[in-house]
Length: 374
Image: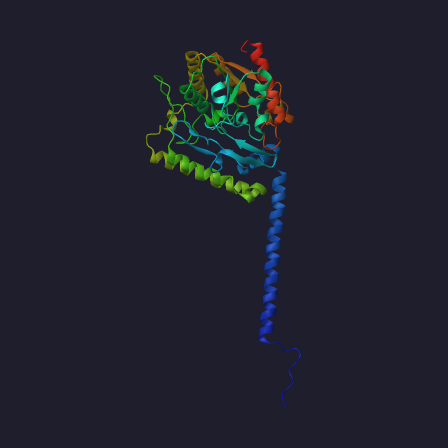
């Protein structure tokens, strides 16, 4: 007769199964604890962020027009230009827009290239970031003034590139009698200092002549690869912690890339030979004034306050320096801050919304009329 198996005895396979379940439960508890801790830490960290810090996080992770493949192309003087004949969708959480460009890459119709009496130059605000073409400041100005306008805005341009673009445009036609409106935003200061060597042209210190650094196509490709990747992160958009980790990582990458490009192109001037701050804008504005006098055009700068300055009712960093440099160069300028309020900007993206573009156009038109320029 077979012996009866004791009820307390358990087979080896059953023991293994029980241990496996226990192990899985432990792992699940650990993972859940880690995730819970991360969620709590993320929530606490996010809660500690100021409005402007959340805006900075957004800017490190949003869709950037000029960092999107196909939207720009290399240019041997300007670093890059908008790709011609574009028809693309551009969106971020606060807007969805359609971007169309003409044969020169400008966000305007083809006829404006030859017919324009007023030229608008600037960066993303002039370009019309976040609004449709009919809502851009330059188009509103055209409707108010009855003057034919060409929008030459290129997202990411500093004032150096804007001036070089004006000079190049003048080589293809007569500028005489035209008004050139430069929309000046505070980040134009940094963008004019050649922050990305080999991509952004910068003014070289030389008392005998005015000349800028040369962009290189290989540097353009390298910078484009890093900048496009920097903004392409789902976790970066949704996590303040991960955004901070990625920001530090990409800062290091950009420092190393800048060093690599300088080694690859020893002809690039050393950083100490690049004009910065007051010296930069004194030289640049003097050159703009001389070029304008030679070509019989009227330059006017429209100074745009950033949203945080509008909210705090304080002047923007670099404002006094820019105003004094414009006055020393005898260039007229109009303050747009007196007509703009926080409601005229996208609250996170910080570009003008449609109301901001309308108010800016109206203020510029009033200034030109009041000073006998129209």
